[in-house]
Length: 78
Image: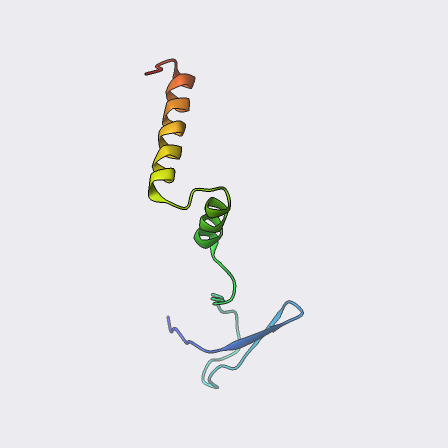
């Protein structure tokens, strides 16, 4: 396995990238990293902030609420 890092351009949903000539024709695996698009964790964090969970204390409160609800569902309310 050989890993090559290069820059590419996406236009109308198609990727265009230049690779070294020694890479022969055939199928390759492609991993796309976009610094301009937030990843899944960044999106979740943004949503949490929008909903008011921007501080660790607020997140802990939410976790406690979820735990309480789970205990209620199991019939073991504290």
